Length: 320
Image (tube, rainbow, N blue to C red):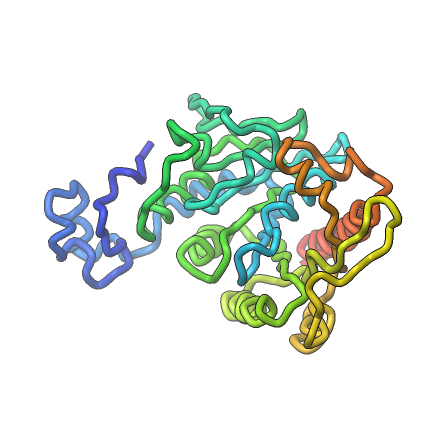
């Protein structure tokens, strides 16, 4: 199995016109094939990705144009919520290569992955939740991943084609902020396997909405269906008196107004609750720990909309 860490530090990428021709390519075992232009043809690994993804019913991307909006927290709790049905098998793939926080949130930090004849074995947070992240490959949790695009792309491809996910009902893909290498790679590799849709996470203030609009435009340009927008940290709910205060005032109408403006569904608003952060630090499911809280109730409403969308998408694909 190829090791993305062996890609030269300043590799221009196999799809670049400079592939195999720059000083960084000197000494690389793939220099000849890259400089010939053959590497710019169809990726032969796509067939392997398709074969691996064939046993996964729904692939959901969780995106955010802005960092710090709670996207990984949302990804983790959507996973917990989907897996609350014991008959539902769920995978959570962390492709935030430089800031992998999913293992900590899911309570599997410090675990390691194992390789078998069928590929890499994911780490199981519970019987029906499989997790994969670069954090499981780091010798020290404090190690920084300082990689350029080609190395990131190579690892994402490995996660998709070499991880033995088994049969899943849902694969939730937690992505980094923005619209860069990781996003282009996962969309490219899953293009023929099929992406069910994207969930876009934002906070109410305009400084976040500015970037989320770009994320929605990205989805439309690359043909990724948008399941809907979630407004996270919509207000602060006091755990004692249940009174809600607006910490981030929606000066331009918030996510609901933006979703209407851009013609995409609004899935709902999630209030701030300090117990969510505590559960994430402890690797616990907030939905199980405090099921009657306003935030947990809001999560369940959003989950119902997501599962309904997935069911409709599956029926449409079957009829087509």
